[in-house]
Length: 92
Length: 439
Image 1 (cartoon, each protein chain N blue to C red):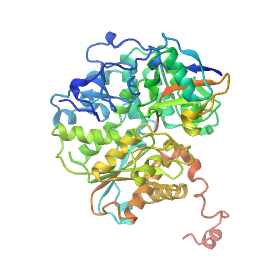
Image 2 (image 1 turned 120 degrees about the vertical axis):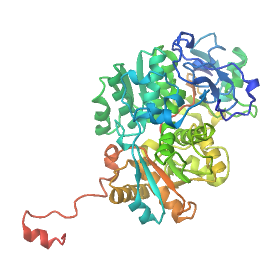
Image 3 (image 1 turned 90 degrees about the horizontal axis):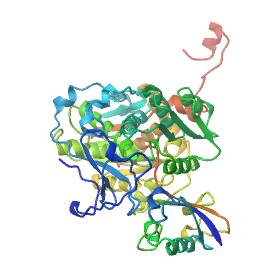
Image 4 (image 1 turned 30 degrees about the vertical axis):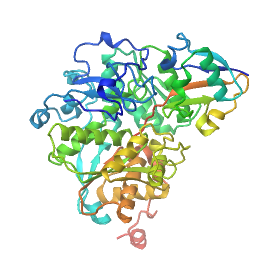
């Protein structure tokens, strides 16, 4: 399964300043491993030592926040658009 | 003096690996662009970075916060300043000549002695910090003023935000006053009055087909791609958030340079609560107020209560939720500062409580009919939580208490329009008047 991943500025030092890259995988976890194989070190920036998504990282698979899906087990169908975005928030 | 961040890393171990955005390098900043601010510090891992357009740590994605070396700041120096937030400019990331740049001059809003509501609820002393009297009728004018200063100093071309209401109003108005182009992104299904409140100030109100979360995500992506865009609550967020400290400074000064015993603050992302606490701690560290215990309480709505739920469960992890409440300005399902709210509530002996939409509506009317203040739904949430805290014995009725009213009820008329209205509709005759039993 080939997917497209939007890379935030924070991680472009790993991708040679590329903002959009492709990766392989049937689940988000596999996609992250695929990214790390191509761009070594990037996985540790989005997944913590316990293998969980870092608290201040938001990942969207087909515009859906994976925290409301199956997290790193979220399926990533062929051609899916994935976005990695640092968490920020408005409000009080 | 240096105000430390919440850091597990010793200052000597600070790292230099951070997110840079696409705005111009901090090396082009003029001297004193950020006043007494010295650097940015990661609240999670303690890594540091020079002042500039950075907002997240590349080690852990944690939020960056402004750190300072205040030197000496006196009450007299502050009291000699203007009656707006710039009287505290020595404590903010703004230049010393901040007053000379056109801005909305927010702040120094009234601290109302809420004697009627206090009597109604059985409290000895209650104050309402009423931020509905800011230029665009919400506390957002404070944070936007600090973001505007940062945008100016960073040479930003466009002043922007994603918003569902109050922030959009504040950004659009501040940009108009400052003569900086603004672009405000809103969900396309936002009610017409809220659109008008922003569109009147800017030609560039952009309606996005999606939810607020979709709009927020889009803003983050634009901020990462287009040089020169200052999104107030994204890439200049560390500077923006500092504006909420002025609520804390003003409360202390207006109480006669002392801290209250208890304070109740609405929680969306949790930023305001953490910044008011930061302000109190800074005032103590600077010797401007006596060091004394105080309790901090957070207020959320049942339909978006991830922080209250975590507090009651006694856990540190915030489980994100999909919001469903009339308190739309508090509807952030994944609150970035939620864990810090938990820390502060627990450390101070306070708490985080939640109330239903019906309780919020009733509390809006309760405050209005006791104090003549028409609050928005976030303020209704705060008043309702205050009432619940008293009724459940979590709040000491004899201790001096402050609540924050974050905005004006005219912004959320729809919330109460179904529960208040004419008591009677009568013919224009005296007989009809007497028959209606109104006298």
